[in-house]
Image (cartoon, rainbow, N blue to C red; front, side, top):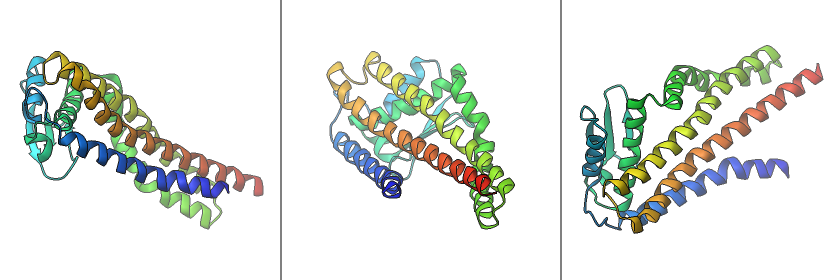
Length: 225
């Protein structure tokens, strides 16, 4: 029974949240803003309001492929959001601008997350190799090494949460204050941003659960010895 519950959480919940995100995003992609600003125009306005004239904005292929690249100071928006003037478009665009503002201000969690990137990449790539080897060869040392690597990847997921929530909070504030949306449009924007945030929450919960499962397996191996 416990395995079934575990399977539901790690398999069904992420799928359900992705479906909810796509449904929410698609719905608000069809609702135009009163300002008629496109995502690119909204992003540019908010960037300029914050003195970030050096941050560029580019369209990219794909749906919800939006991101901020701190290496070349560029906000990249999927074409729907770059050219679209919907609630969804400006919400996602200003969220990514929120990351640019975080970067400019030296937001502590963002700096910490950037520092964790190489460690997290190594951890996610090597952890399962060592954990699997530890289980196959009943080697507690290899199992422990795999858990340490995986814990680094989990830490990255955990640190991502305040970064994303803070960017969404900034987005909601600046959209209204700069006239990108009206007060009565804020609830729609909040729904889009909250749906996107749920994906990060789900990923983090699942990563933590996986880490706990590996730790319990490691404890079990030690008890068997």
